[in-house]
Length: 89
Image (cartoon, rainbow, N blue to C red):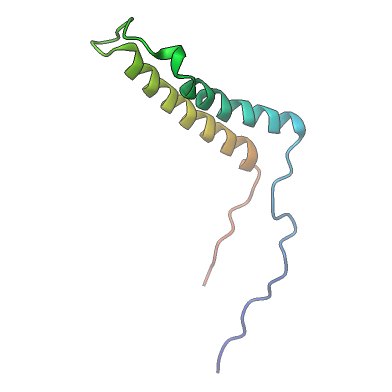
């Protein structure tokens, strides 16, 4: 006998509902390092050096870490109250 497929009823809360304040905070957390990394004239220089690395390189790496932290913080803000849902068989 073939089992019937699970019902495709939409979940009660498919997406987290965020207030406008939280949305703005999340946008700033993600957009700030991205916009700083895209503004090349800001960091198009070699001085000051940090550990022998020119400013260009360590600024880019700092922005990559800042963007990752911003994405992580945004995920935490948006999904911290969500319950784990998965396929249990």
